[in-house]
Length: 188
Image 1 (tube, rainbow, N blue to C red):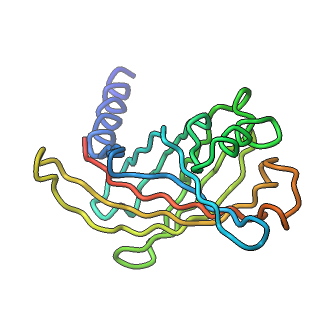
Image 2 (image 1 turned 120 degrees about the vertical axis):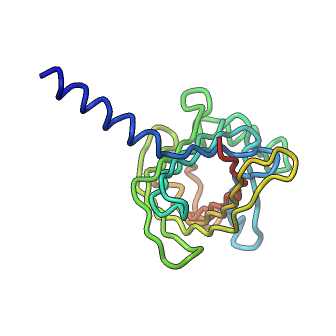
């Protein structure tokens, strides 16, 4: 029994040894969204405070797990009144649900630099599966720190009402929210 426990411990440590952890370089990353207002113009927003990480064993990221959280209270749209409204109960309800989160559950490599990322997005306490397109912009080395870096772009669309966000008609604010996140990740 003791030998089995030791063997299991060695196996677990070997599996975790190969996993590579990458964290977002927030100075070179952005998490944002776009909605259409009055079926005429696009309004962009982003979250000033967020965390994102990648865990992968394979160098081509074909087994990567992406995780992300954003502080709803840090939403910025370029308009103080709109930012304040987005905090209210009918929108993100920041008082009760202060974060938005995403965790991938599978990744499919389409070609050398394109992937389909499936995951669970949680907003306003509601979790729904989402599919995102992901592009690997490149892999390199930070010239200052000499640490490996990788750049990604994620795009996709979600329906705001699936998450209980906003009761206004789609003629005022589009039902579809475009998600766009770009990130430079540093290998730890």
